[in-house]
Image 1 (cartoon, rainbow, N blue to C red):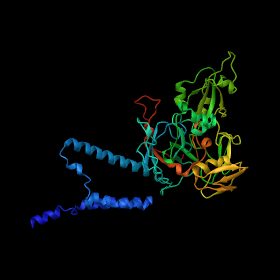
Image 2 (image 1 turned 90 degrees about the vertical axis):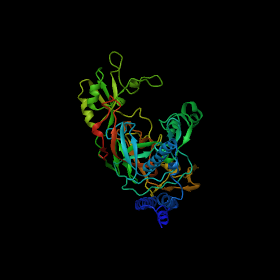
Image 3 (image 1 turned 120 degrees about the vertical axis):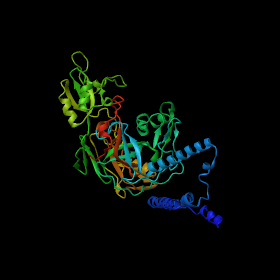
Image 4 (image 1 turned 30 degrees about the vertical axis):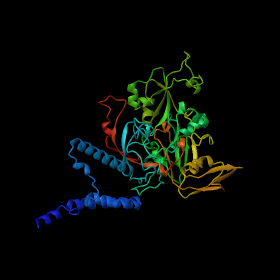
Length: 475
Protein backbone atom coordinates (compact mmCIF):
# COMPACT_ATOMS: atom_id res chain seq x y z
CA UNK A 1 0.00 0.00 0.00
CA UNK A 2 2.84 2.38 0.81
CA UNK A 3 4.43 1.86 -2.61
CA UNK A 4 1.17 2.67 -4.38
CA UNK A 5 0.67 5.76 -2.20
CA UNK A 6 4.16 7.06 -3.05
CA UNK A 7 3.55 6.52 -6.78
CA UNK A 8 0.46 8.72 -6.61
CA UNK A 9 2.32 11.51 -4.86
CA UNK A 10 5.08 11.58 -7.46
CA UNK A 11 2.85 10.99 -10.52
CA UNK A 12 3.10 13.34 -13.50
CA UNK A 13 -0.34 14.89 -12.93
CA UNK A 14 -0.20 14.99 -9.16
CA UNK A 15 1.02 18.57 -8.73
CA UNK A 16 0.57 21.01 -5.91
CA UNK A 17 -2.33 23.44 -5.59
CA UNK A 18 0.09 26.33 -6.02
CA UNK A 19 1.18 24.97 -9.41
CA UNK A 20 -2.46 24.68 -10.50
CA UNK A 21 -3.09 28.27 -9.43
CA UNK A 22 0.01 29.46 -11.30
CA UNK A 23 -1.07 27.56 -14.41
CA UNK A 24 -4.60 28.97 -14.21
CA UNK A 25 -3.37 32.59 -13.80
CA UNK A 26 -0.80 32.32 -16.61
CA UNK A 27 -3.23 30.66 -19.03
CA UNK A 28 -5.97 33.18 -18.17
CA UNK A 29 -3.66 36.13 -18.79
CA UNK A 30 -2.49 34.55 -22.04
CA UNK A 31 -6.08 34.05 -23.25
CA UNK A 32 -6.99 37.65 -22.33
CA UNK A 33 -3.91 38.84 -24.23
CA UNK A 34 -4.99 36.83 -27.29
CA UNK A 35 -8.49 38.33 -27.12
CA UNK A 36 -6.91 41.82 -26.96
CA UNK A 37 -4.61 41.11 -29.89
CA UNK A 38 -7.39 39.42 -31.85
CA UNK A 39 -5.20 36.69 -33.34
CA UNK A 40 -6.71 33.43 -32.13
CA UNK A 41 -4.09 31.30 -33.90
CA UNK A 42 -1.96 31.97 -30.83
CA UNK A 43 -4.29 29.68 -28.86
CA UNK A 44 -2.34 26.79 -30.40
CA UNK A 45 0.48 27.67 -27.99
CA UNK A 46 -1.76 27.32 -24.92
CA UNK A 47 -0.89 23.62 -24.37
CA UNK A 48 2.76 24.62 -24.01
CA UNK A 49 1.97 26.78 -20.97
CA UNK A 50 -0.13 23.94 -19.51
CA UNK A 51 2.74 21.50 -20.04
CA UNK A 52 5.27 23.85 -18.38
CA UNK A 53 3.23 23.99 -15.16
CA UNK A 54 1.19 20.75 -15.07
CA UNK A 55 1.87 17.83 -17.42
CA UNK A 56 5.61 18.39 -17.98
CA UNK A 57 5.88 15.99 -20.90
CA UNK A 58 8.71 18.13 -22.24
CA UNK A 59 11.70 18.43 -19.85
CA UNK A 60 11.85 22.25 -19.90
CA UNK A 61 14.31 22.38 -17.00
CA UNK A 62 16.49 19.44 -17.97
CA UNK A 63 19.65 21.45 -17.31
CA UNK A 64 18.85 21.61 -13.59
CA UNK A 65 19.68 17.90 -13.31
CA UNK A 66 23.28 18.45 -14.39
CA UNK A 67 25.91 17.71 -11.72
CA UNK A 68 28.45 20.03 -13.34
CA UNK A 69 28.36 23.32 -11.43
CA UNK A 70 29.74 25.27 -14.41
CA UNK A 71 27.03 23.94 -16.71
CA UNK A 72 24.45 24.82 -14.08
CA UNK A 73 25.76 28.35 -13.70
CA UNK A 74 25.90 29.01 -17.46
CA UNK A 75 22.44 27.50 -17.93
CA UNK A 76 21.01 29.62 -15.10
CA UNK A 77 22.41 32.81 -16.63
CA UNK A 78 21.24 31.85 -20.11
CA UNK A 79 17.76 31.06 -18.82
CA UNK A 80 17.57 34.39 -16.97
CA UNK A 81 18.83 36.40 -19.95
CA UNK A 82 16.46 34.73 -22.42
CA UNK A 83 13.52 35.28 -20.07
CA UNK A 84 14.52 38.94 -19.56
CA UNK A 85 14.85 39.56 -23.30
CA UNK A 86 11.45 38.02 -24.00
CA UNK A 87 9.87 40.02 -21.17
CA UNK A 88 11.46 43.28 -22.35
CA UNK A 89 10.38 42.55 -25.93
CA UNK A 90 6.71 42.22 -24.97
CA UNK A 91 6.78 45.09 -22.47
CA UNK A 92 8.32 47.45 -25.07
CA UNK A 93 5.95 46.19 -27.74
CA UNK A 94 2.64 46.40 -25.91
CA UNK A 95 3.04 48.40 -22.69
CA UNK A 96 5.88 50.89 -22.18
CA UNK A 97 9.11 52.05 -23.74
CA UNK A 98 11.96 54.30 -22.67
CA UNK A 99 12.80 57.29 -24.86
CA UNK A 100 15.52 59.93 -24.61
CA UNK A 101 15.06 63.49 -25.89
CA UNK A 102 18.03 64.11 -28.26
CA UNK A 103 17.18 67.57 -29.67
CA UNK A 104 15.70 70.87 -28.52
CA UNK A 105 12.63 70.86 -30.77
CA UNK A 106 10.24 70.69 -27.79
CA UNK A 107 12.04 73.08 -25.47
CA UNK A 108 10.91 74.28 -22.98
CA UNK A 109 8.26 71.58 -22.55
CA UNK A 110 10.77 68.73 -22.87
CA UNK A 111 14.51 69.31 -22.50
CA UNK A 112 17.50 67.72 -24.17
CA UNK A 113 18.57 64.92 -21.84
CA UNK A 114 15.07 64.08 -20.58
CA UNK A 115 14.36 60.34 -20.33
CA UNK A 116 10.67 59.60 -20.88
CA UNK A 117 8.46 56.66 -20.05
CA UNK A 118 6.27 56.30 -23.13
CA UNK A 119 2.93 54.52 -22.81
CA UNK A 120 1.97 52.24 -25.69
CA UNK A 121 -1.49 51.53 -24.24
CA UNK A 122 -2.56 55.20 -24.20
CA UNK A 123 -3.25 55.33 -27.95
CA UNK A 124 -3.26 51.55 -28.36
CA UNK A 125 -0.14 49.46 -29.09
CA UNK A 126 0.57 48.35 -32.63
CA UNK A 127 0.96 44.75 -33.65
CA UNK A 128 4.55 44.83 -34.98
CA UNK A 129 5.18 45.11 -38.72
CA UNK A 130 8.51 43.33 -38.18
CA UNK A 131 7.93 40.83 -35.35
CA UNK A 132 11.43 39.33 -35.54
CA UNK A 133 13.56 42.05 -33.98
CA UNK A 134 16.08 42.38 -31.15
CA UNK A 135 14.75 44.08 -27.99
CA UNK A 136 16.01 47.58 -27.10
CA UNK A 137 17.46 48.22 -30.59
CA UNK A 138 15.33 50.33 -32.92
CA UNK A 139 16.97 49.43 -36.23
CA UNK A 140 20.73 48.90 -35.72
CA UNK A 141 22.64 46.67 -33.33
CA UNK A 142 25.34 48.65 -31.50
CA UNK A 143 29.00 47.65 -32.01
CA UNK A 144 28.06 45.16 -34.75
CA UNK A 145 26.45 47.98 -36.76
CA UNK A 146 24.04 45.59 -38.46
CA UNK A 147 20.25 45.51 -38.75
CA UNK A 148 18.51 44.62 -35.48
CA UNK A 149 15.54 43.04 -37.27
CA UNK A 150 14.65 40.48 -39.92
CA UNK A 151 12.51 42.00 -42.67
CA UNK A 152 10.34 38.92 -43.14
CA UNK A 153 7.64 38.23 -42.24
CA UNK A 154 5.99 41.64 -42.66
CA UNK A 155 2.62 41.97 -40.93
CA UNK A 156 -0.06 44.45 -41.94
CA UNK A 157 -0.83 47.45 -39.75
CA UNK A 158 -3.14 46.74 -36.83
CA UNK A 159 -3.59 48.78 -33.66
CA UNK A 160 -5.05 47.32 -30.49
CA UNK A 161 -7.65 49.16 -28.46
CA UNK A 162 -6.12 51.91 -26.33
CA UNK A 163 -7.16 53.95 -23.32
CA UNK A 164 -7.47 57.23 -25.22
CA UNK A 165 -7.17 58.94 -28.59
CA UNK A 166 -4.81 61.71 -29.71
CA UNK A 167 -6.14 65.17 -28.89
CA UNK A 168 -5.02 68.71 -29.69
CA UNK A 169 -1.75 69.62 -27.94
CA UNK A 170 -0.94 66.03 -26.93
CA UNK A 171 2.77 65.22 -27.09
CA UNK A 172 3.23 62.16 -29.31
CA UNK A 173 6.11 59.77 -29.99
CA UNK A 174 6.04 58.48 -33.57
CA UNK A 175 8.16 56.89 -36.27
CA UNK A 176 9.71 59.43 -38.64
CA UNK A 177 7.53 59.34 -41.80
CA UNK A 178 10.34 60.43 -44.15
CA UNK A 179 12.57 57.72 -42.64
CA UNK A 180 11.31 54.95 -44.90
CA UNK A 181 14.34 55.45 -47.14
CA UNK A 182 17.65 56.50 -45.57
CA UNK A 183 21.28 56.93 -46.47
CA UNK A 184 23.49 55.09 -43.99
CA UNK A 185 26.10 57.85 -43.68
CA UNK A 186 23.84 60.94 -43.67
CA UNK A 187 20.75 60.97 -41.45
CA UNK A 188 20.15 64.73 -41.41
CA UNK A 189 18.81 66.06 -43.70
CA UNK A 190 16.56 63.16 -44.67
CA UNK A 191 16.84 61.18 -47.91
CA UNK A 192 14.12 63.12 -49.75
CA UNK A 193 15.70 66.48 -48.91
CA UNK A 194 19.08 65.17 -50.08
CA UNK A 195 17.55 64.05 -53.38
CA UNK A 196 15.90 67.44 -53.80
CA UNK A 197 19.11 69.33 -53.03
CA UNK A 198 21.63 67.12 -54.89
CA UNK A 199 19.56 65.00 -57.27
CA UNK A 200 18.59 61.36 -56.82
CA UNK A 201 21.29 59.94 -59.11
CA UNK A 202 24.02 61.90 -57.31
CA UNK A 203 22.89 60.57 -53.92
CA UNK A 204 22.69 56.96 -55.15
CA UNK A 205 25.98 57.09 -57.05
CA UNK A 206 28.12 58.64 -54.28
CA UNK A 207 28.27 55.94 -51.61
CA UNK A 208 31.51 57.31 -50.21
CA UNK A 209 29.66 60.47 -49.24
CA UNK A 210 26.12 59.24 -48.47
CA UNK A 211 26.55 55.51 -47.89
CA UNK A 212 24.10 52.84 -48.98
CA UNK A 213 20.46 53.72 -49.61
CA UNK A 214 18.26 51.35 -47.58
CA UNK A 215 14.56 50.92 -46.79
CA UNK A 216 13.14 50.59 -43.28
CA UNK A 217 9.70 49.24 -42.27
CA UNK A 218 7.36 51.59 -40.41
CA UNK A 219 8.11 50.32 -36.90
CA UNK A 220 11.89 50.30 -37.49
CA UNK A 221 12.14 53.99 -38.42
CA UNK A 222 13.62 56.60 -36.09
CA UNK A 223 11.49 57.68 -33.14
CA UNK A 224 10.54 61.37 -33.03
CA UNK A 225 8.55 63.32 -30.47
CA UNK A 226 6.44 66.42 -31.25
CA UNK A 227 3.21 68.10 -30.19
CA UNK A 228 -0.04 67.39 -32.06
CA UNK A 229 -1.22 70.68 -33.54
CA UNK A 230 -3.71 69.37 -36.12
CA UNK A 231 -6.07 66.38 -36.01
CA UNK A 232 -7.59 64.36 -38.88
CA UNK A 233 -10.16 66.50 -40.67
CA UNK A 234 -8.70 69.82 -39.49
CA UNK A 235 -7.67 72.60 -41.84
CA UNK A 236 -4.43 74.19 -40.66
CA UNK A 237 -2.90 77.51 -41.57
CA UNK A 238 0.04 79.49 -40.18
CA UNK A 239 0.05 83.27 -40.59
CA UNK A 240 3.06 85.18 -39.23
CA UNK A 241 3.94 82.18 -37.01
CA UNK A 242 0.42 82.13 -35.53
CA UNK A 243 -1.31 78.74 -35.92
CA UNK A 244 -4.95 78.67 -37.03
CA UNK A 245 -7.10 75.52 -36.89
CA UNK A 246 -10.31 75.68 -38.90
CA UNK A 247 -9.91 79.45 -39.02
CA UNK A 248 -9.51 79.90 -35.24
CA UNK A 249 -6.24 81.24 -33.80
CA UNK A 250 -4.71 78.74 -31.37
CA UNK A 251 -3.39 79.77 -27.99
CA UNK A 252 0.32 79.06 -27.69
CA UNK A 253 1.50 76.45 -25.21
CA UNK A 254 3.46 77.92 -22.32
CA UNK A 255 7.16 77.78 -23.17
CA UNK A 256 6.73 78.08 -26.94
CA UNK A 257 9.84 79.61 -28.47
CA UNK A 258 10.66 81.62 -31.58
CA UNK A 259 14.15 82.49 -32.77
CA UNK A 260 15.44 86.06 -32.80
CA UNK A 261 18.47 87.82 -34.23
CA UNK A 262 20.04 89.70 -31.33
CA UNK A 263 22.63 92.42 -32.03
CA UNK A 264 24.89 93.81 -29.29
CA UNK A 265 26.88 97.01 -29.01
CA UNK A 266 30.17 95.15 -29.45
CA UNK A 267 30.19 93.30 -26.16
CA UNK A 268 29.36 89.61 -26.33
CA UNK A 269 26.62 88.03 -24.23
CA UNK A 270 28.22 86.36 -21.21
CA UNK A 271 27.57 82.85 -19.92
CA UNK A 272 25.87 84.27 -16.83
CA UNK A 273 23.53 86.27 -19.05
CA UNK A 274 22.75 83.16 -21.10
CA UNK A 275 21.92 81.25 -17.91
CA UNK A 276 19.59 84.03 -16.73
CA UNK A 277 17.63 84.00 -19.99
CA UNK A 278 17.63 80.18 -20.15
CA UNK A 279 19.53 79.56 -23.39
CA UNK A 280 21.63 76.38 -23.48
CA UNK A 281 25.10 76.17 -25.03
CA UNK A 282 23.79 74.30 -28.07
CA UNK A 283 21.37 77.16 -28.79
CA UNK A 284 23.95 79.94 -28.48
CA UNK A 285 24.47 80.59 -32.19
CA UNK A 286 27.02 83.35 -32.76
CA UNK A 287 26.67 84.35 -36.42
CA UNK A 288 30.14 84.74 -37.91
CA UNK A 289 30.17 81.88 -40.43
CA UNK A 290 30.69 82.59 -44.12
CA UNK A 291 28.42 81.17 -46.79
CA UNK A 292 29.68 78.42 -49.15
CA UNK A 293 29.97 80.92 -52.02
CA UNK A 294 32.36 83.08 -50.01
CA UNK A 295 29.86 85.77 -48.99
CA UNK A 296 29.52 86.83 -45.40
CA UNK A 297 26.36 85.54 -43.73
CA UNK A 298 25.57 88.86 -42.04
CA UNK A 299 26.06 90.75 -45.31
CA UNK A 300 23.71 88.28 -46.98
CA UNK A 301 21.09 88.87 -44.27
CA UNK A 302 21.29 92.65 -44.70
CA UNK A 303 23.30 93.62 -41.61
CA UNK A 304 25.33 96.80 -42.09
CA UNK A 305 28.94 97.08 -40.99
CA UNK A 306 30.04 99.58 -38.36
CA UNK A 307 32.52 102.46 -38.78
CA UNK A 308 35.41 99.99 -38.50
CA UNK A 309 34.09 97.96 -41.41
CA UNK A 310 33.08 95.09 -39.14
CA UNK A 311 29.79 93.69 -37.93
CA UNK A 312 28.66 94.02 -34.35
CA UNK A 313 28.14 90.64 -32.65
CA UNK A 314 24.88 89.03 -33.79
CA UNK A 315 23.27 85.95 -32.22
CA UNK A 316 20.43 83.73 -33.30
CA UNK A 317 18.64 82.70 -30.10
CA UNK A 318 15.42 80.72 -29.42
CA UNK A 319 13.43 82.67 -26.82
CA UNK A 320 10.16 82.33 -24.96
CA UNK A 321 8.13 85.48 -24.34
CA UNK A 322 9.60 85.68 -20.84
CA UNK A 323 13.15 85.21 -22.10
CA UNK A 324 12.58 87.81 -24.84
CA UNK A 325 11.69 90.42 -22.22
CA UNK A 326 14.86 89.57 -20.30
CA UNK A 327 17.00 89.96 -23.43
CA UNK A 328 15.46 93.38 -24.10
CA UNK A 329 16.74 94.50 -20.70
CA UNK A 330 20.35 93.36 -21.25
CA UNK A 331 22.59 96.46 -21.25
CA UNK A 332 24.70 95.31 -24.22
CA UNK A 333 21.75 94.49 -26.55
CA UNK A 334 20.90 97.21 -29.09
CA UNK A 335 18.63 95.44 -31.59
CA UNK A 336 16.26 92.42 -31.65
CA UNK A 337 14.55 91.09 -34.78
CA UNK A 338 12.52 87.94 -35.25
CA UNK A 339 14.21 85.37 -37.49
CA UNK A 340 12.61 85.80 -40.92
CA UNK A 341 13.49 82.28 -42.06
CA UNK A 342 15.79 83.47 -44.82
CA UNK A 343 18.12 80.52 -44.21
CA UNK A 344 15.58 78.03 -42.84
CA UNK A 345 15.28 75.77 -45.88
CA UNK A 346 12.30 74.70 -47.98
CA UNK A 347 9.07 73.40 -46.50
CA UNK A 348 6.72 70.57 -47.50
CA UNK A 349 6.00 70.01 -50.33
CA UNK A 350 9.16 71.43 -51.92
CA UNK A 351 8.56 74.61 -53.90
CA UNK A 352 4.80 74.55 -53.40
CA UNK A 353 3.08 77.96 -53.56
CA UNK A 354 6.01 79.68 -51.86
CA UNK A 355 4.88 78.55 -48.41
CA UNK A 356 7.30 79.16 -45.52
CA UNK A 357 7.58 77.85 -41.98
CA UNK A 358 5.87 81.01 -40.62
CA UNK A 359 3.31 81.48 -43.40
CA UNK A 360 1.95 78.09 -44.34
CA UNK A 361 -1.23 76.66 -45.81
CA UNK A 362 -4.15 76.40 -45.62
CA UNK A 363 -3.78 72.63 -45.74
CA UNK A 364 -6.37 69.91 -45.09
CA UNK A 365 -5.23 67.10 -42.77
CA UNK A 366 -6.56 63.78 -44.15
CA UNK A 367 -9.21 61.88 -42.19
CA UNK A 368 -9.98 58.20 -42.71
CA UNK A 369 -12.94 57.80 -45.06
CA UNK A 370 -12.91 61.44 -46.19
CA UNK A 371 -12.91 62.11 -49.94
CA UNK A 372 -11.20 65.13 -51.51
CA UNK A 373 -11.23 66.52 -55.01
CA UNK A 374 -7.84 65.66 -56.48
CA UNK A 375 -6.19 67.79 -59.15
CA UNK A 376 -2.75 68.77 -60.36
CA UNK A 377 -2.78 71.77 -58.01
CA UNK A 378 -3.15 69.89 -54.72
CA UNK A 379 -1.55 66.60 -55.82
CA UNK A 380 1.92 67.55 -54.44
CA UNK A 381 0.36 67.84 -50.96
CA UNK A 382 -1.19 64.35 -51.02
CA UNK A 383 1.09 62.47 -53.42
CA UNK A 384 3.18 60.93 -50.65
CA UNK A 385 0.04 59.89 -48.75
CA UNK A 386 -1.43 58.18 -51.81
CA UNK A 387 1.75 56.47 -53.00
CA UNK A 388 3.98 55.84 -49.97
CA UNK A 389 1.66 55.59 -46.96
CA UNK A 390 -1.39 53.96 -48.56
CA UNK A 391 0.39 51.82 -51.15
CA UNK A 392 -1.16 52.94 -54.42
CA UNK A 393 0.43 53.42 -57.82
CA UNK A 394 0.18 56.98 -59.09
CA UNK A 395 1.08 58.55 -62.40
CA UNK A 396 0.12 61.49 -64.59
CA UNK A 397 -0.65 61.14 -68.29
CA UNK A 398 -1.81 64.04 -70.47
CA UNK A 399 -2.68 66.12 -67.37
CA UNK A 400 -4.86 63.27 -66.03
CA UNK A 401 -4.18 61.60 -62.66
CA UNK A 402 -4.19 57.79 -62.62
CA UNK A 403 -4.35 55.87 -59.32
CA UNK A 404 -3.85 52.12 -59.68
CA UNK A 405 -4.15 52.63 -63.48
CA UNK A 406 -7.61 54.23 -63.16
CA UNK A 407 -8.22 57.86 -64.15
CA UNK A 408 -9.58 59.79 -61.18
CA UNK A 409 -10.51 63.27 -59.97
CA UNK A 410 -10.91 62.40 -56.27
CA UNK A 411 -9.37 60.27 -53.56
CA UNK A 412 -10.70 58.64 -50.37
CA UNK A 413 -8.19 58.30 -47.54
CA UNK A 414 -7.59 54.92 -45.87
CA UNK A 415 -5.99 56.23 -42.67
CA UNK A 416 -6.07 59.14 -40.25
CA UNK A 417 -3.21 61.64 -40.32
CA UNK A 418 -1.84 64.17 -37.85
CA UNK A 419 0.08 67.44 -37.99
CA UNK A 420 2.90 67.53 -35.44
CA UNK A 421 5.15 70.47 -34.58
CA UNK A 422 7.79 71.36 -32.01
CA UNK A 423 7.35 74.04 -29.37
CA UNK A 424 10.76 75.42 -30.35
CA UNK A 425 9.14 76.57 -33.58
CA UNK A 426 12.17 77.85 -35.49
CA UNK A 427 14.39 74.93 -34.45
CA UNK A 428 12.12 72.01 -35.16
CA UNK A 429 12.13 69.65 -38.15
CA UNK A 430 8.43 68.84 -38.10
CA UNK A 431 5.35 68.48 -40.31
CA UNK A 432 6.08 71.80 -41.97
CA UNK A 433 9.15 70.17 -43.54
CA UNK A 434 8.04 66.57 -44.19
CA UNK A 435 4.25 66.58 -44.03
CA UNK A 436 1.62 64.42 -42.38
CA UNK A 437 2.14 61.71 -39.76
CA UNK A 438 0.07 58.59 -40.61
CA UNK A 439 -1.75 56.82 -37.79
CA UNK A 440 0.29 53.65 -38.33
CA UNK A 441 3.44 55.64 -37.40
CA UNK A 442 2.14 56.63 -33.94
CA UNK A 443 4.17 54.92 -31.19
CA UNK A 444 2.76 56.22 -27.92
CA UNK A 445 2.27 58.98 -25.38
CA UNK A 446 4.96 60.20 -22.96
CA UNK A 447 3.77 59.90 -19.35
CA UNK A 448 6.54 61.36 -17.25
CA UNK A 449 10.25 62.20 -17.11
CA UNK A 450 12.00 59.54 -15.00
CA UNK A 451 15.49 61.03 -15.43
CA UNK A 452 16.88 64.30 -16.79
CA UNK A 453 20.56 65.00 -17.44
CA UNK A 454 22.00 68.40 -18.33
CA UNK A 455 25.03 67.77 -20.52
CA UNK A 456 26.17 71.38 -20.03
CA UNK A 457 26.59 70.83 -16.28
CA UNK A 458 29.33 69.04 -14.35
CA UNK A 459 28.95 65.40 -13.36
CA UNK A 460 27.58 66.06 -9.87
CA UNK A 461 25.27 68.84 -11.02
CA UNK A 462 24.08 67.22 -14.26
CA UNK A 463 20.92 65.66 -12.78
CA UNK A 464 17.93 67.99 -12.99
CA UNK A 465 16.35 66.88 -9.74
CA UNK A 466 13.32 69.13 -10.18
CA UNK A 467 12.32 67.26 -13.37
CA UNK A 468 12.50 63.72 -11.97
CA UNK A 469 9.11 62.00 -12.26
CA UNK A 470 7.58 65.14 -13.69
CA UNK A 471 4.41 64.32 -15.63
CA UNK A 472 4.16 65.38 -19.27
CA UNK A 473 1.05 67.53 -19.60
CA UNK A 474 -0.59 69.23 -22.57
CA UNK A 475 0.37 72.63 -21.22
